Length: 332
Image (cartoon, rainbow, N blue to C red; front, top):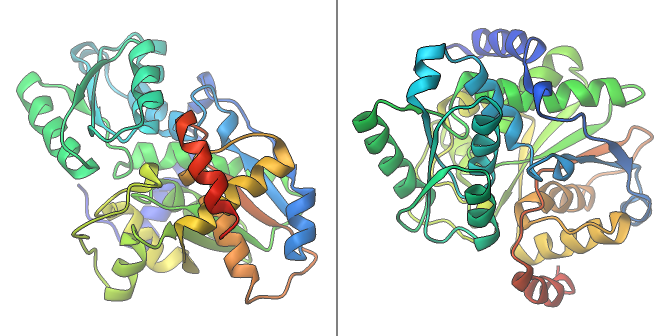
């Protein structure tokens, strides 16, 4: 991977975001007012509805942007990825749209709803290991053996740029700069794309990443001044169960992210309920992270006239988890 200074990387990402081809398959998702949540936190809250994408998550953006820029001979050989679910669906959907063979390596702990969705999209599936790191290692090995193009879920320039188109939409949809944008963080691809764009074109906006307290690789990395590898990660928010953040994301975060907020599983469950109350939609735990972080941040900050934006990143949750979420929501 090329060695970038933060400034060089941000400038390159901005160019790639502005020329991205994601709208061949992705849709511009709405930015909706969360009336109930706004009342409870004492500030206007807007929800960026990435849960309404064709694969019910933002991951389609980066996957398509990466595969679309491949040369024809590289497309013909096929692509491979490792994913806990949403990136897998994004790659499978994008590969089908571009008529590219796709192999998806998923941890055995991946929710069945995500496995079935990837299979329906026509990708070959391998279930390997209990976490993302194990699946990624296997994907790299098989990719090398078969000469497949690796589509990394977060540590790739074109993937990060594709995710950054979310911020481009936000700038157009907001009537003036929001006060802060809350971004869920796993490997950091979405955070890097959003931060690179917003801090360049709307520098007064605070960019705040949100992680589960039990999967806080970005928080710990920024505190240490280098990327750290977690020994274990929690699996409740499976979409952000990453032991080590991406190099690109860390580089951007060191200079373009204002802070990282950590939240508990109970706070995530409460945020799922908050989203449901305002939208009648059920997002997955990782999809509710931004709302949970927004609520925690507002507990120690004053609200203002400028709205706060939370990115709802996905809605792929097994139905049988709803009872647990409902029970824990009262504690968050």
